[in-house]
Length: 49
Image (tube, rainbow, N blue to C red; front, side, top):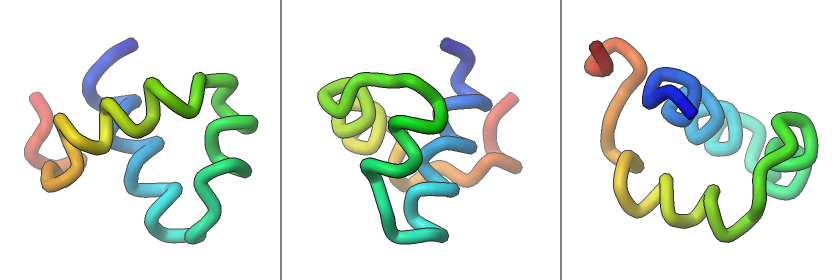
């Protein structure tokens, strides 16, 4: 999955405050979400190339 899409998913989960809803919407595994959050959690979408 592209970094830009991953960061978008992370930002959306933070904005709505419901991780389970977001991972269902984008059909990703919960484990993947938490791994992405650990790796990209502090990156904003504008910082992604």
